[in-house]
Amino acid sequence: MAIKGQIVEISAQAALYQKARELSASKKEILESKLHYLHYSLFDGFLVGEHAGSEHFKLGQRKGINVGGKKAPLYVIGIDEKQNRIFVGEGENHPGLMIQVLALSEEKIALPQDLLLSKEDLEHGVLVEVATANFNKETAKLYLFETTFYLEFEHSVSIVFATTELNLFYNNNNITNLKTTL
Image (tube, rainbow, N blue to C red):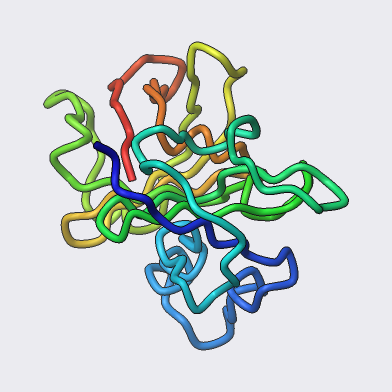
């Protein structure tokens, strides 16, 4: 039996979508500030309905949300399985449907031993291409700070990148593939 959960709508004008302050922040802090999809909470939006279980939803999903009375369709922009909440945004141009940065724990990326990248190279960012089965290649920079890798895309990409298998290419060589999860 599924436990009912909350559907929370996040406005496209929510403060968490405002540009990161880059004046005095370190690169790691700037990257962290762009991870808005990890930080949705009940207090970022307002309740608009109930659902029958967060396991029935995927990022980017439009159908099956069952909340009416909106000018544009709602899309799933975030899922909090622990709190059994899904977060939705109105319209296909909602900023929650696009991401610029992904964070991955070090164990998610197994870089080849013969890849000659120093820790310093990775702290300054290494230019890579990121590809999925469903998308063209996207240009990104790969960073490593402590035990977390960050992929900062040149242009915003679909939130679907956050839950799909990615292939990383460095100097036109496939260096790793990984399954991302939030």
